[in-house]
Amino acid sequence: MQATSYTYDAETRTGSVLLDDGTPVPFDAPAFDAGGLRLLRPGQRVRIETEGKGESLRITLVTLQTL
Image (cartoon, rainbow, N blue to C red; front, side, top):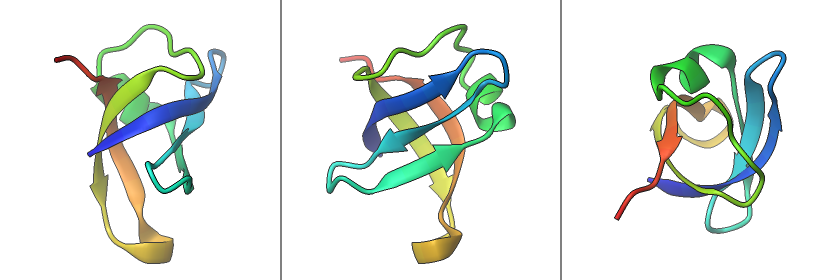
């Protein structure tokens, strides 16, 4: 799934993305670390992997979207 980086805190390695419908979804440090990234800037297009649906939707991986 694709999303857009919305917030990122380099100290805690947590943040949030916006899904294409505008829904914000937070991610935690393990999801960020799983993607192997060092930094994330607002507005970057990212690829995410998720678990669950609706209110229990959880991001398990955040990495850069490459073409």
